[in-house]
Amino acid sequence: MVFGDDAAPGFTLRRQRFVHLGHRPPLHHMSESLYSVAAGMHDLVVVSVIDSPSPHVFRAKIEQIYSCGKGITPDRLGTEFEFYSGPATWGNVPLQIGERALLFVHQVSGVFNEYPWRGHMVLEEIDGESYARLQIPELWLRDDLPEAVKAAAAPHPTRRNASIVRFGALENYLKGLIEKAVR
Image (cartoon, rainbow, N blue to C red; front, side, top):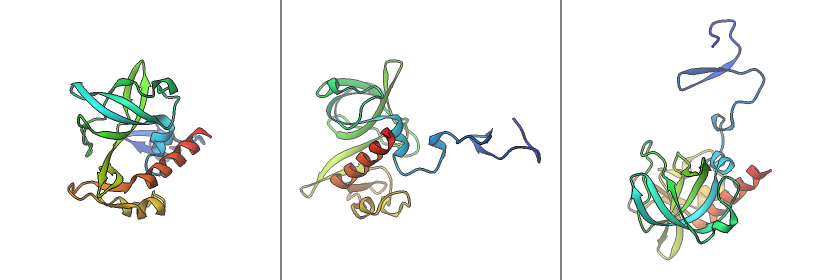
């Protein structure tokens, strides 16, 4: 590590200093829009949670596949799989048996893992409309979201630390992120 006046420009992450030598820092350390890192490093699927065989492990049925290549393959549509949920920190709320959700997931060494920072968005029907619940309060105030998503966001009717977004608006936004990540 290099410190002092002679040190190259760099950035600090988790008490470690990384020297910037003209290379771009890793994607997940840059200012990105909400879920752009997840879209680039994980597959997006809609799942229905069937069981939780052990803490932080869920069994779910894949109902829809938005992206493949990080462990999810087209032949998994309609099948069940197990995955480890994101950590129960930073406001992450675990999925519940019976819930349907958009899920960012990837496979490492044969094990599926949820994107660690709010990697799922529970799908809900509210007043006859489809919404996705994000464990992010006041989502409509974020600077890293397009106006169409902000306009489709509202406070969750019963959960004070969550927002809801009309499913179609969120789905279009996530599809756009996936398209950019594939390029």
